[in-house]
Image 1 (cartoon, rainbow, N blue to C red):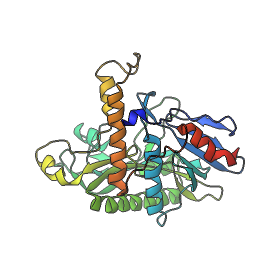
Image 2 (cartoon, rainbow, N blue to C red):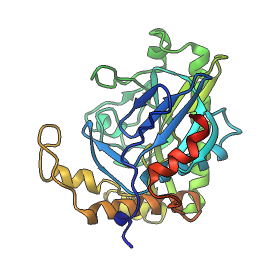
Image 3 (spheres, rainbow, N blue to C red):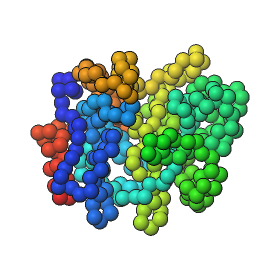
Image 4 (spheres, one colour):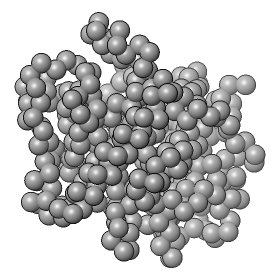
Length: 318
């Protein structure tokens, strides 16, 4: 049976739960006792809009993050309290720090703030780091680096920051920056070490940190998932790098590429996306879970619909 014939979770509005906030992909509910319920839907978002729902995407992201939260719990505290459902994490509510933390091990990326984009534009001093002149696209960096950006609000754009900017502008204290830096580099090193025997290269990743009621810095959101991280296939990396080709990766951007080939996704109506394309994307997410964790993906179809299952498993919070 095609995965598109299976259950999807396009939304997760549960009126019995308090303080609802809907993000692009996740539905959030804040409980009075300081806990936050985070439900990962199957929505796929790009171009500041939702394009489609990909079967089991939310379960893949939640369970991949769970694997990594458990594998890195000795490095730094995280927000996780429990997992009442395959798509749901209950965590401590945090005050999110106003700095986006991206760790990069390679000269890669396509966004305006990626080191490869800026390097090709001639920049050699980026994020407080001096880069040599002879680096090639997708080359391993001499060491993993943190490339922090400001968090964009009200439609603004992320802006590159240096550690001096972060402390000087009062975004973080020196102690907070030192702690975040230490945690981020240690998490990335653990991620690369565990990805290597799976035949994967963890290229770069995004972390989100917050502070709890006691002021401790805590890892939040997700960690080392296919949506927050770039993974390359190790076996073919060297050959493709030497040939000047883009490394093999988990290419999940079928939907994004299909849409951009047919319209201006920022202004035009989105065409109906074919079922086979959605199915293909779903299979890539499931394959990514298995490659990253080394575990078989077991979709939960234990109830009439995913929303009915989530409601049942969250009933004790009503």
